[in-house]
Amino acid sequence: MSKNKPDWLYQIPNENEYEYGVGSSNLTYFPETAWQKAEKRAIIDLAANLHSKIGSVNSHSKAHHQNISNSKTKIQLQNVLVIARWFSIQDGSYHVLVRMTK
Image (cartoon, rainbow, N blue to C red; front, side, top):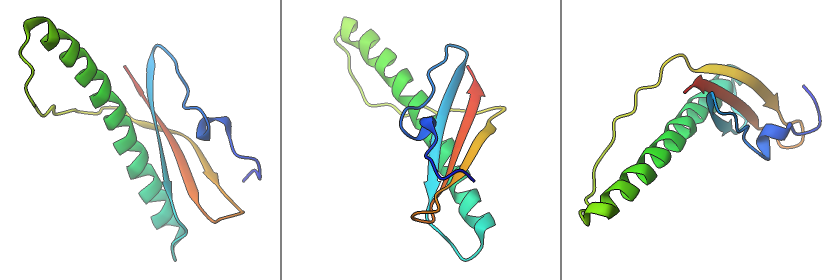
């Protein structure tokens, strides 16, 4: 893998048709386990990004009605793809970028 950090570790891509998530994992005994952890964390990051966007829309809408309440939103992710993987030689960390169509 490349020695230079990929751009997506500094700035998650911003495209109208896709949502993205980035996840990382520390070095483990089995590299496959580290990649799986990083991928899972990227999917969690993607879901969190979606949830915050949904939450901001709901908060804006509720503010007009002066009725703000806490609610949980169930998010279903479909067709999540791993777009890129990167291993850091310097610190042994694993990084994954995932993408889902909006």
